[in-house]
Length: 100
Image (cartoon, rainbow, N blue to C red; front, side, top):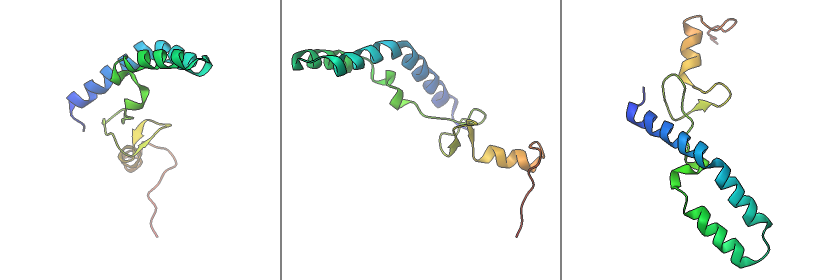
C-alpha cells in the first residue's frame, strides 16, 4: 500500500493538470501556428510561467486499489499483484493457476 500523502499529492497534480489543460493546449497551438519568432518566444515564456505540476507528463499512473506506482496495467488501472491475487481467490472467472 502506498503512502496516503503520495496518493494525495497525485490527486492535487491531477486537479492542476485539468485546470490548466485548455490554457496549455491553446498556447502550444499558438506556438505551432505563429510565424514570427518573437511571437513564439513570448508564448513559450507564457507556457513556462504555468505551474510545473500542471504538465500532464508529471502525472504518475497508480493502481486504483493499492496505489502502487510501478508495474501497472493501463487498461485496468491495476498493479500486477492485484489480478494475481484475484485469480487466487477465484474472483476472476476462467482463470486458474497453471503448473508445468
